[in-house]
Image 1 (cartoon, rainbow, N blue to C red):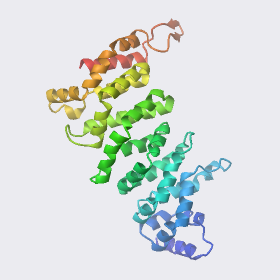
Image 2 (cartoon, one colour):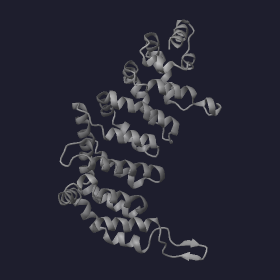
Image 3 (cartoon, helix red, strand yellow):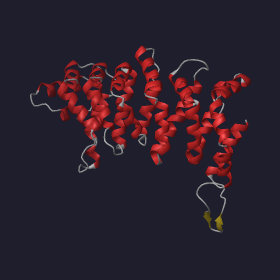
Image 4 (cartoon, helix red, strand yellow):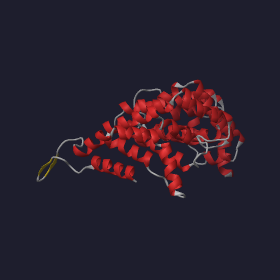
Length: 336
């Protein structure tokens, strides 16, 4: 440690020191975490923070060789997400937050590696500075629209889910959850995007909703939690009707979501009868919507999407495929 500290001290004493030389030191992260004051002061200075953010928030040029292309970007992200209080304080500045959320500005798919940097930095900020982050988002709600646009990137959908489930004893966060539900109408906007999404974006939105349902049902029935508040919004009559209609039009992705909403979780099974009654109460609008779409579910069973399946022995006009299995599984859950 002392040898590494001396090397870094020598580097920082030079008038021509550059960030890349500091990041090239093997022990720079450990030295930072033990609160080496000269190094922490250098890394959290305005000019150095700008360079670190440039690396961590911008995709490197493609002409660089692959083994060095993301080297400094990765090291910069490790420093910024090191969870060292002075670094986290600097990462929570208005300038830094703007740079982080500007990663979602381009209307092109986000590079998965760059997306992982986005998630790592936000994970630290959610844990250490949730009030500051949600206040910044409330002032610029278009950030949430950008999240929804990039739901095809797993790191972005994970960061969005973490944001929905923020649950800290801080008044600002509680107000943020109410603002998300009522003013931003986040559940309605998710369904808006779900109705037109395809491919990875559709999968990302479905994954967020399924994880939200699991988180809500894991919390105590009747207890207040961000997940339960959002689940109640998702199961309101207008949104439940739209979700069911979409699920019948996109059964491969939609039927498993309906199944997740209807399944009785283990947390409800301590008192099976009471648990079932609570689940029926929560799902009353969804059950009405499914009943109204019963004919559509029957059509999926009789004439599944995709047409005939060509096999070595000839065409199979009604294939026993994945979509029909999902429909049968949904019916089993309804019967139970």
